[in-house]
Every structure is written in C-alpha cells, then in structure tokens.
Amino acid sequence: MTAAESDRRLAIALLSAVAVAVVLLRLFDPATAGIFPPCPLRALTGWYCPGCGSLRAFHQLLHGNLRAAFAMNPLAVLSLPFLTYGLASYSAFAFRGHYLPRVFLPAVCIRGLGIVIVLFGIVRNFQTGFLPLLAPGGLLTLR
Image (cartoon, rainbow, N blue to C red; front, top):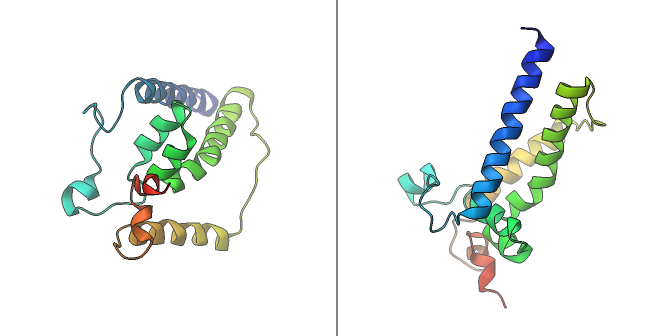
C-alpha cells in the first residue's frame, strides 16, 4: 500500500468517525442518554478538565443553541472551526494531493495555547467570585 492510499484510508476513517459522532450527538443528549463515556478525570477526581462539557456543547450546537453550547464549554466552541479546518485540509490532501492554505504559527503561540488550555482547566474548578461561571453550564445561570 502506498502512502497516498494509506492517507486516503485514514481520511475516510476520520470522516466516517466524525459523521457517526455528529449523528449520535444530534440524536442523543450526552447529559441523559448514557451512551457516551464520562470524563475520566471528573469520574476519578471530581474536577472539571478543559474538555468537560464539550459533548454537551456540540450537542447544543447541532440543535442551533449557540448560547447553551458556549455555556457548556466555551473553549470547545471556539476551537471547533480550527479543528474542522484541519480535518478538511487533511482530507483535501488525502484526496486531491494538496492541503488547503496552511497557516503556520510560531512556537510561542502554540505554547501560549497550551498554557491557556491548562489554565482554563484549573480556573474552572475554583468556586469563588465569577469563576464558577466557567464550569460546564455555569454561564446559563446568567440572565
């Protein structure tokens, strides 16, 4: 098998997995369905990780509720366009032989993003001041 065939098969597998996940998230509410796994960090420690609430956020997005999605996990909602573009770019390479226009970030930006993700995971667990608003669903308490 050539590298191009391998890339095509991987792209097909990724696109298929995303399609199945989108259908499942559209049909079943992760908060009540019981078919989605719980967050391992939350189950073991009781703390929210940076990704906690992201399945519920994507479920809300698929139902057109941006406010509720942002309330569940703002970081997941903000990262979705970039993840989608990355998957589309890889798929374009696998099927057409060239990527979509690529943006290269300096290493300091990537490190900064890593720091933002870690800090988001930490501060959403504090229960003082406005910080409980960062817990999944916390922003829904604002009116």
